Image (cartoon, rainbow, N blue to C red; front, side, top):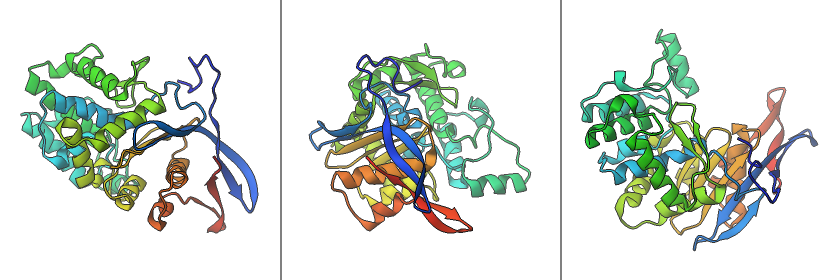
Length: 322
């Protein structure tokens, strides 16, 4: 879905980053961003921040929120894994098995696509070991395991848990609309096969802000799980982990198609998406958005550096220009 469809005002993504090689701008990334003030108002935006997009895996913490509202009660590490696009490292796969076992299920119940681990190191190790693609290694298996556990808890059919009309998905869509403050205009199918709900970048940032500032209830549980176990939400070698480590108390989630949402405990929140979906520019833009809102540190800046190599040495960079 384009970020400019269904926008009667004709707002469009803008150039947000330049690809600079040897001092020459050889290309651009177009996208949209939004930053919320501590009180939840829009502080600034670029492009089409109030037009519906598909936030991809940025939606996972909001879906996990819906499951906790339905009574799912997991330890914090496993709740973080329910929010994850995990790397497929051993502790991730063990955690998925623990979620399933808590509901009396095995990995045979998962309906994720067959896949190797997302992380390069873990994937290469799996291939060297002769491991075939399996459902548990797919990066969304934590979310799927939590969905299955919620179905068992509620007495709902686990075999049809991905059906958009399943009571689980109906309940999760209601939570999603509630926490984003926007109606769901589009229900698509995500890469893992689960329903994928649309919202604007403003709605996405608003939802993450609600988690980050909560002092009790299911929202607080999700935020505390992400804060306590950020490596379970991504992996040990991921840029999201580096950013959350650099921002104590922050919560965040990246998604496919270069989506990203981050919220701080003081209520400031950020969401972005690029049109080309290039993952390389996503951390560059988030670090720049944080700087524009006055959040400056060497550690944060480091998460947004993407050098371009020539002959094996840096000769340029991708740099934000909004």
